Length: 93
Image (cartoon, rainbow, N blue to C red):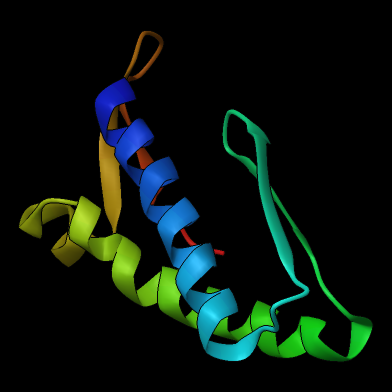
């Protein structure tokens, strides 16, 4: 729901900060213009390392926001007015 979505947005904001601290520079900038959008401004030569670290950490750590059953299945079942339920893949970058 919305609460879980807000938790993942907060998780992503913290993760971006940690990754910039780990592999970025003091000149990097991270912003959150709203909703589920984020922006990172960095030097071109640092962008790939930041991207790779963000993808790896997000994909590994976002699973903590799902129930054990959803993690085991690899998807979430959500209500669908037309079909009753539908499968939605787990979040990833």
